[in-house]
Amino acid sequence: MRIRIVGAGAMGRGIAQWAATAGHTVELGDVRAEAVTAAVDFVRSMLERAVAKGRMSGADRDAALERLVPLDDPWAAGPEVELVVEAVREDLATKAEVFGRLERALPEAAVFATNTSSLSVTTIASALKDPTRLAGLHFFNPVPLMRIVEIVPGAATRPEIPPALTAFVEGCGHRAVTVADTPGFLVNHAGRGLVTEALALLEETVGEPADIDRIARDVLGLRMGPFELMDLTGLDVTAAVIDSIWQGFRHADRLRPSYLTPNRVTAGLHGRKTGRGWYAYGPDAPAPAPEPPVTGDPDRPVFVHAPEGQDRDAAALRAALAAAGATVESGDGPSEAAVVLVPVWGTSVASAVAADGLPAGRAFGVDPLPAAGRRRVLAVTPAADPAAARDARAVLARAAAGEEPWAVSVVRDTAGSVAQRLLASVVSVAAGIAERSIAAPGDIDLAVTAGLGYPYGPLAWGERIGADRMLALHRALHRTTGDPRHRPSRWVTERAQLGLALTDPGTSPADC
Image (cartoon, rainbow, N blue to C red; front, side, top):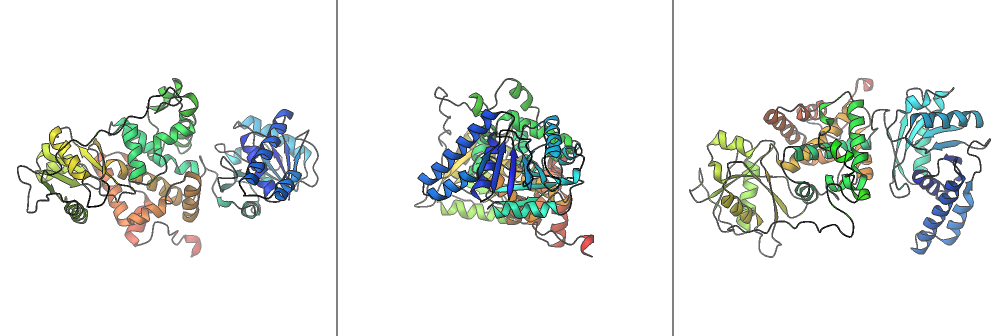
């Protein structure tokens, strides 16, 4: 296939490298001739690096470079061009001008694709005389390494174009998912679940950014915590995406932005690229603060209280602590000396204290989510005795013989604790994508694992917990907080009620 790419910046040159390496002839054009020269030099350096690392032969490198054709004029006639990929800046007027000029220069047979990440494909196409020839083809940076592409048909796109683009993408070695033309498409939309809930936890002073990031990594198994991720992406970019998706979905509660971001963006606290975001960067930046040492009494007796419906979690915690050599009391209630640990699922320690008459100064929450690493989370209420909290932390840090001790994060008591709320939001936002038929369940999980690096797709992640248990978590969060952001989704509710997996698309009226 002969392809033309218009825009020789980071995305354009990445798409050019990917397509030329896959065997396609790639014309690369830009209104700035120097950008084309720099892009070709960049692609050459990337291919030479691949040869040096043994990932490509010298002959394949030379063949790929031979297929890369720099253009002096991006609007030149191209009767053999079958596909045009626009990769210019995210500005509607600029993209409309580009496609208007391309429409005059190229034959009607050529398919047009926009690499927009945030603009409506339908709106871009509306500027064309023939809007049926355009679709979205959203790549992620760096293109050769991010092996997922979103294919976004506009409202007028010809029906044969999305499957043709799918075949093209997958023929080049990437995976393709088809997504409805909606704000944020799929990956950017799904990613709001993690960062918006992390910001909400920070608003409520449940924990500091470092606390929330450690829990996200060590309990949920994420490669980066949400605040580390915002610093890498740039808070200015993250905040703009959050706001645009929230506005695009008419102020949906689940996507509600935080009041914390506007001032930080205005102050230039954008993350790595400005030297300071949620963390400091650069050679003069202070080292990250270490976690506080464990100073309490690990031999203090402990009583594990089971709130209603939490018998299984309480039994598992008792067994783990006993295996580590802790003194675990039995019976109907704690002794005067014991600290009380309460596994909570969507509820708070404070509610357990009020409902079950627990000693407020000695009662602490423990997140029962199975940890991806050796970290437990201890939740403290405003009534907690600090000395008892230190002892509870020491007890939780105990390890069985031959094992490393547990790290223990101490956070403010909140419904569901940190990891549960992050996971509930990730699953809930993905469920909203599925129930709106923005993308198929399998495509949601594929795109998120490939595009965001989560250990599991969000629906598959929820299924590992179980639809019933996820529904119980959403209901408890909603009931405990009254916040509509936690309202259970129809997708999770129906599947729990019907015994279906969260990953199951189910039967639609069209199937009948």
